[in-house]
Structure formats: structure tokens, C-alpha cells
Image (cartoon, rainbow, N blue to C red):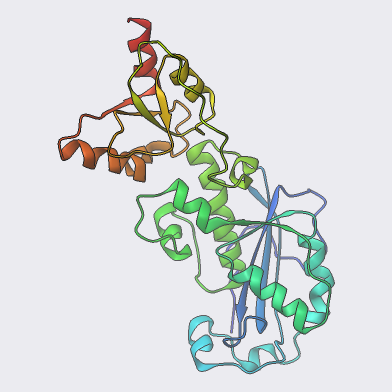
Length: 292
């Protein structure tokens, strides 16, 4: 079986590159339903949107191969004969991941590495995980699926599905493209969604007094919320039946796909049903208040 190299940089079995990556990406394939049965692993490092190192190897899972899994990735027992076990490569894998931000497309790869470490009675790998599925759902909410092959087609990423090295590269490019699309940097993506401070209390008087306003694109304790509350508006957690206005932040973290966001769709549905709810940008709101 041949696993093509889809990257102009050569794959390497050496330790981490001297060019310290901003994040690394890991993907594994497994031999059977046991997630510990890793039979291939791919790791790619990215710095400033560019690949800086790649590592791939087949792995002897010391376990059976199921027909189902073989059909998915094409790896069978003869391909891993004489290949290193997970215990043999544990130190190398840990060297790439430890102390770094590690991207994986869903929690499967994280669980597989944890299980493989446990079965081999080896130390768990200490890294900080980022799920590229979660990133993709926020960056491209209009897509009906956020599977890696679907995202790759949508973004024009060259990709061979269920090849660990190619999957790792594609997931890394999802992160790179999401940062470009939304303007949210890596640390912004690392911040857990939904952890927002308390909304500021509405001023007793102002041009927005009586308005119930949801904000798209900023936390409810952010600068726009402070502006709204200072003008007398009540800042809401989300669009609901009593919302009178949805204001889209100038930051627009959803890029050009603002209209596909759930809050925007909800506001449109309410308006279509006869609710008196306005949808306007931050610039429009500030211009209105400046002229009030």
C-alpha cells in the first residue's frame, strides 16, 4: 500500500522541527473498534499558516484488524508487519505534542492516544487540545456537515480521506483557513465558547431605553454591549421572542457567513412571523445614535 505525500515538505521521523510550531495536528487510524489499536499516525506542525514539519508512520497495533476498519483506511496486517509498536514511538509522539496546542478533528484521536498510552502502561501525553470540528462549525455554520472530507472540498484543500498524514494536514489547514476567514487568532479559538461575563446593566435613560438587544459577534460583556447598555438598551443573551434588535458587531467573527448564524436565522424567522425586530450592524446603530 502506498501513502502519497501531498505536501511539498518531506515527511520526517525526526524530533520537532527547530522552527517552533504555533500548533501541531495529529490524526490516527485504528485497526479495530478498540480505539487503542492505532495502526497509523500522522503529525504535522504549523507556524504562521505554513507547514514546518511532518511525521507519519504505520504502527503495529498488537491487535486484530477488523474488515470494517480495513475497508475504511485500506491498512491490513501485512502493511504493519515489522513496523514499530505504539510503545516504540511513544517518546517521539510525545516530543511532538507535549506542551503544545494539539489540533484533532473531533475527540477521537485524543481518546485513541490516551487509550494507547494506558494499554501500553506509558505516561499520558500532556498537551492542550483544540477540536477543529468545533472551529469549523463556528467558522462555516452554513455547511450541513463538518466532516473533514466535506470541509476539504469546500475549502479546496487537497486531501486523501482516512490517510493519517493527509487528514492531519487537512485539519491543520481548516484551522489556518478559519483564522483567515474570521479574524480570530489561535488564542481566540482556544478560548472556550459561552464563557462570558455578566451583561452590563442598562442605563436608566438613553435613546435605546426599552430596547431588548442581542449582539452577534461579541461577548455580552464586550465593548459593544457596554455601548448599548450606556444608551439605555438591555443586552440579552440570545435572540428570543421579546428581542427588539439584533446588532452585528463590527468584528464579525463569522466572516461573510453572518447570515448563516443561528442567531441571525432566528431573528429572520421572528421577523417573517410578524415580530418587530430590527437587524442592523454596529456601524448602523452608532450612526443612528449619533444623529439622534
